[in-house]
Length: 346
Ligand code: NDP
Ligand code: OXD
Image (cartoon, rainbow, N blue to C red):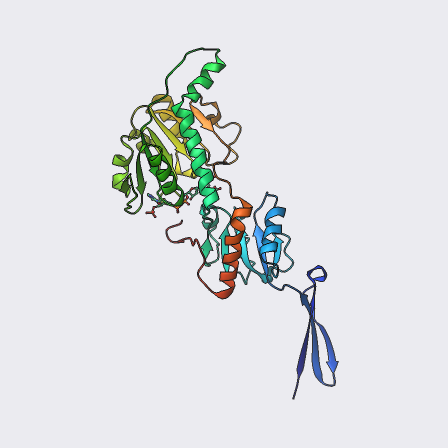
C-alpha cells in the first residue's frame, strides 16, 4: 500500500526556498510537498576580494541551466557541486558536502593546496594561451628594459645625470621551470636570438634550448646566465629554494626576474645579492606577502623593479569555456582538463 507521496514543485530560481517540506496527511498516506529550485545544483565562486559580476554573468551564459553563486552568499551549501576558487579562506570548502571538483581560477594552485583541510577531490587549474601570451609579453618587456639599460637611465634621471650607455649584452637566458609558461618563454626568447637554457624537475627536450633537470643540475643551468627567470610553481620542494646558495651560483652582473611566487625566493638573500653582488638588478612581480607591506626594505632597493603581481592575470572571457567544460566533466564523472597533481603540488 502507498505510504508516502512526494510532490516536487520546481520554482524559478528567484522564488528559491529549499524544503521546508509541508507535510499533509492524505487518508493515511503521508504527502510531502517539496518546493525546490529550478536549478537545484550550483557552482560556487569562492574568490574573495574581487568583483565577480563578469565571471558570474559569463559562466551563467555558458551554463544556462546551472545556478552560479558567489561565496559566502550560498543559498544551500549542500547544493554546491563545483567550486571555482582563488585564495580561499582555509576550511571554507568543508561545508560543501556534495562538492565534486575544485577549479582554480589561476595557473598556480599553491594557495588552494595549502589548505590543510582541503577535501580529497580533483583539482584543475587554468592553462590558457591568452595568459601564456601575457606572461611572455611581460617578460619580453622586462628583458628589453634591462637590455636598453632603462633601469640605469631611470636612476640617472633622479640625479639629472646625462650619461649615454650602449645596450647591455644580454645573451644567455635561463628559465627555471619549463612547464606551460616556462616552455613558451623559452621558445619566445630562442626565436628572439637568445641562447636559452631551462631547468625543470624532469628531463626535457625543447628545440634550441639546453635543458637541465633536478637539483644537481641547477648550478650548470644558471652558471653562465645573464638573465634568470623564475617560473617554478610554489611547492614544498621550491619553498625558499632560491636563497643565498642559489645567488652565489650566478655570475657577476646577472639579472634575476621572479614572476612565479614570492615564497620561492629568500627576500633577504636577494637583497644581499643586490647590495653585494652578484646581481646587477632584479625584477619581482610576486612577493612572500602581497600586497608588499609599505615598510618592506624591498621598496627602497634602487636596483629592484617592483610590479604588483600583474605579469599574467586570468582573463575571464578566455577561461570561461574551460571552467564550464570542467563543470560538465565533473557532472559526468570524467577526468578534468588541466588537472593538478596533488602529490607533486602543481
Ligand atoms: P607548470 O606546472 O606547467 O610548470 C611547472 C614547471 O616547474 C615544470 O616544468 C616543472 O618540472 C617545474 N618544477 C616543478 N617543481 C620543480 C622542482 N622542484 N625543481 C625543478 N623544477 C620544478 O606551471 P606553469 O608554467 O603553468 O606556471 C608556473 C607558475 O607561474 C605557477 O605555478 C604560478 O605560481 C606562476 N604564475 C604567476 C603568474 C603571475 O601573474 N605572476 C601568472 C600565472 C602563473 P616538470 O616539467 O619536470 O614537472
Ligand atoms: C596565477 C597568478 O597563478 O595569477 O594564475 O598568479
